[in-house]
Length: 159
Image: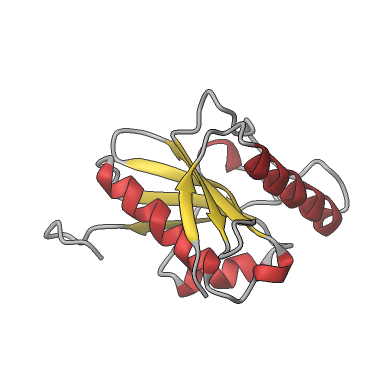
């Protein structure tokens, strides 16, 4: 399958619809809407927002980066609609986010998911992310599982 991955504004209607669908799915998985430790992402703190479009131009997935410090960023709002899961679009979005992070000089990517998302945990582990102790707002959260991936090795080469 072929996708187009485009940078969009945080307020893009297609991206907002995908983020709302993600929120609704997580509300069901966690049994409440109280499953996001920390400050939710917003236009003010998201450095990059990507939307994946299928060959018909329909938005099927999204992902964002929020800068954490000079060397690292956090993946936020990574989501693929259920009908497009298993097609490779999630990998394409993640790889586009990683490339964008490197272009900005960020060499480490962190993210948070949760125990009610074993599919997400398997995906990130398959993509080379290692589980880490909770960081930032996730410290002490019982609904957070955190991951990290170095995008360059010790010699500075891309991983």
